[in-house]
Amino acid sequence: DYGRIPLIFIPNHGQFDQRVAYAIQGSDKLIYFTSEGLTFLLTERVQASPANEKRVLREIDPGKSGWQAHHKRWVVKLDFVGARKNVRPESLGQAETIISYFKGRPEEWKAGLQASSKIIYRDLWPGIDLIYYGTVNRMKYDFIVRPGADPMQIKLSYRGAERVTVTQEGRLEVSTPVGAFQDETPVAWQEQDGKRAVVSV
Image 1 (cartoon, rainbow, N blue to C red):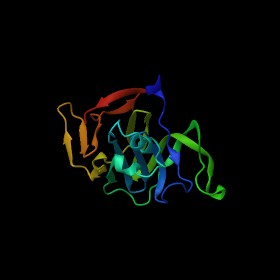
Image 2 (tube, helix red, strand yellow):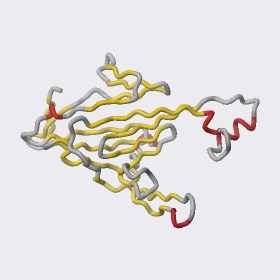
Image 3 (cartoon, rainbow, N blue to C red):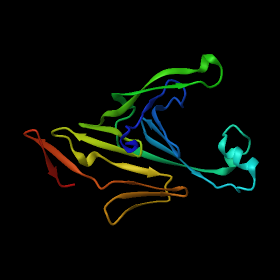
């Protein structure tokens, strides 16, 4: 059941950098959605010596001095190559979740933020929309190509990865010093008479 919980896209109301429109916050990664593309902030937990209790406590509590020393972080950027400028994602479906941030002075608090379960970049390339959605352990994205639009416009580029390769199964694997993540093998279809017809891709 846990794996079916939808992803939560958090809107930016000043709690993130102004370039960020939405964000996903996970246990080992942050994903920021901007008009230029996505930024993945990946975190790898480094094991502390169990004999050193103070060190372990610093790992558990980010507010404690020394916490940064026990984590490795890496940033990967996914760019929308040749896309229209300043296309910010919009909500395409509200989640049942409300997010609040109580940090700093009371006037800096952000309360009652309506999260989304799906976001869309409209007309990112001429005639092509990009939609993000998914579950807590699997983010998906769809390109919606309208009649007459050229899917060859779609170009994505990763920056900050050690390497980007295609696996034997056809998945795209992005490797970094703190681990790897994969894109599933592409699938394409179009609707004909209310049914999905597979298109080679």
